[in-house]
Length: 431
Image (cartoon, rainbow, N blue to C red):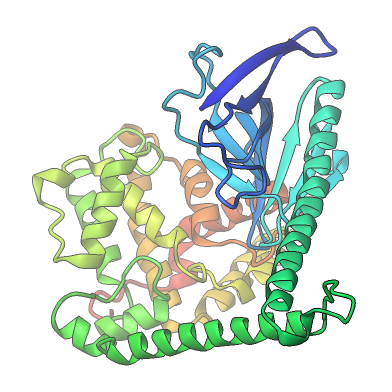
């Protein structure tokens, strides 16, 4: 059970330290199942900047942070909660394993002051910040000390286990007692026996896994039974088009057709967000069953446009391939307008057929949206802002993201304005 105790921090604001209520079972601190102690809790600003080594955009949010054992747990800011009753039934948003994590001050990574970075062994990186310097320094020291204590506890636990094994083994060996009756510990025998036990356990687990894999039905059988269907979201564009024997994915065609039938006059089409839960439901339907966008459950056109944007964002490689991004940006920077258009045309023509034709299909569709800008307010510039980062992005966000976004938007605007020059005359039956 968690019991909060309030104390005043150096700046006079309330901070909360959480402790665990002592167990009545009489278990010792050495027992394996002991509940870890909650060492500290409080409100900090948090953003995740990397996941698995892949850089993410900063998105600062206030978070209720709890340090418990070797884990850092994040809750939503409990503004409406009474601290005396916290955590109650609150569910954490995420947690971080501090074992092996690296901690360092990182004021150079943000315009905010009093920032430190936490990097886990899995390559996830977080920035934590507080406007109060003394508070953030206390958090830094507490997390750092917690990591040191965890290492010490792990070392002590290993040592205790080693000694217990040593005593047990020596008490059951004939040569464990010396001539004067004292106990003789033959240490070299211990790790050897422990190693044998460990190897035996590994072999047993490998054997079970092998049997499980051999009994598993092949992927083709599962697909034939309808238990596993080919994915649409997250599938590579070329692979998806090859599977559908087309150069424009069927899902893209269905979405744009639906928008052109009943959404061109809608205010803020593609800019207004649809209901995320319904979008995810649509995403699931695309991947697992036959999709009919005329079904009443997809009545909200913003759900369809949201799902289409999500499809492009989840492509393993964006519609404008990574290898073209730098050249597109350099082309947009060209000062001579006609030269800029010609260079962009050559780049578009040299893209793989699925990328070229799908891009052409989308730009032609977005021009139809743009033609109704008096009703939907989606001008060339507004469409560029929405679809610039959706259709193209750099493989590594090494430069200035804001500058890149400007060029991404301008590239889409140029494709819209010079559609005929870049893609040529309409070829209705070609794809």
